[in-house]
Length: 110
Figure (cartoon, one colour):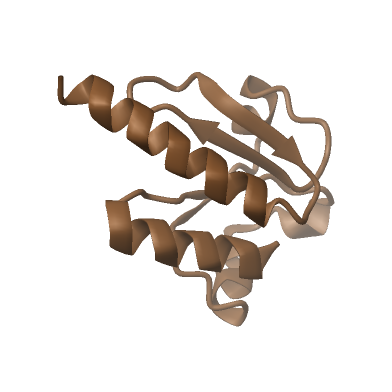
């Protein structure tokens, strides 16, 4: 999933200033520490900010059930406009982000 996110982050940040934020909700106890999250961010050269959801608050708020999960939020609220689980969604995300950007850009500027 990281190569897909890197591609999308680079494309949409440069073209449209869209921000990507990672949220680490640990599957196992030994993955919960902030040091572990920081080490993984450095190891995999992740460019976007990553929050450590060590108490699974964000995970529960968005009713996630499987890893990885992708949640896209509208620019006006924290209501999800798309939720995907699993890997291999680069094309869907690319198209959806493009369409959503055009929709929200037009609605915010008119």
